Length: 111
Image (cartoon, rainbow, N blue to C red; front, side, top):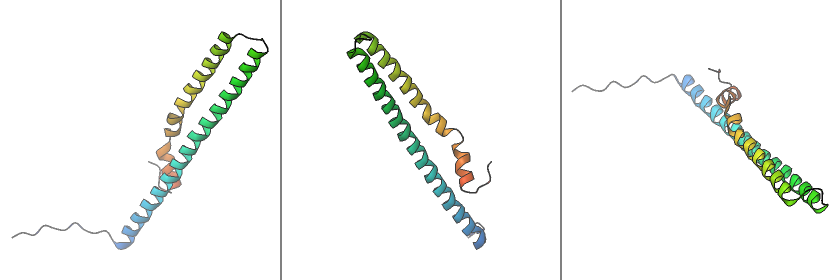
């Protein structure tokens, strides 16, 4: 009966380096993902603050008679649409070069 040939095991030093590289990459990935999440939340908060400021400005213009309700609503819709469009671009901006940043942070040669 033939026995299956066992795959050759890498030397212990090589094996431990592979384990350490995996740990470095996993840590780098977590750091980059946390940074990406922080950026998303930061941008969202900034856009909400800007929208609230614009809302306040439009309400002040309306209450002082400088504009009518229809113009104020149009301005707020345009501002809101612009904000939503910019927020939708964030994931693509974060994704651009993401793997490269993780590998660089992990000290791995960039392929």
